[in-house]
Length: 262
Length: 135
Image (cartoon, rainbow over all chains, first blue to last red; front, side, top):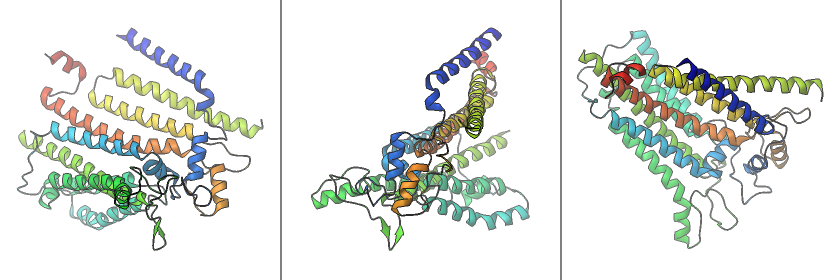
């Protein structure tokens, strides 16, 4: 067994050495980026010279995630959805959401502080998500921040407290499905508009393209929303927050059930 | 090549070497640690190392005396856009890492669920024990 371990280690080191030899000039950063990255940086907010290719978002990462490579993100969202569905399917038999009495939880001080900080967590998460096209952040990060709240409540109060307050997994699945539905609807909005108008447009189109002249609104009353990006971030925030809440609730409920069985 | 550039290259090489060491150690742990949870932890370390590696590849050296910038535009005028395209780091790896983190989290969640099922079946998470009990 020791021989196998040593052989595996040696092979790993040699392979990585080969990788460095072949790709050193691509791996080591230089002061020029690749032409593709240069184009993305140049086009992310450029109504001056690249009006037909720009995403109208000052944040290049969000522009790539939801505009230039939007389909990638769509399938990534579905991978996340499938992993959650698989988890729920695996734990189907073990789970029962009948909360008779809430657990004791932690002390009164911790509970009061949690009650004060709970709205703040939601506000911070919503702010990160809704400013995703202006500052670092976006739907994924905002949703993950909001998903901290059920986790904190489960630890400080108890899992059955959360169930008694009405935050059940079935409701969370509804919220999650609505978020995904919103993402899909935003992706085909311009297509529907162009069908009504009799012109043509692309799926996942945001701003005008050379051969598709329909466009999402760049701003609402002077506040930049970058077309579809704001809506995508909003719906993704709901989807991610609900998805992680489901996972936390299921994991923690299962733990309580197992301790009760013993 | 000035001495500043040599120091810069040296520091970047140190980062690269530690990332590669991290790759080897985490893969080794995934293969040979007997406990399921330790395997999962090693897998998260592997994923984080891969993400850091992607960010590292997208980094941009200083252009002359101008430090490289984050890929977020702070002033909206034509000159700022030109300067931004000249100085900002590569945003593409960052966008890929952003999605990779969420996928990684979902996969880890699935593995945790799987480990829980494994535990309720075998009453142990030691892979040697499970291999012995199987069948």
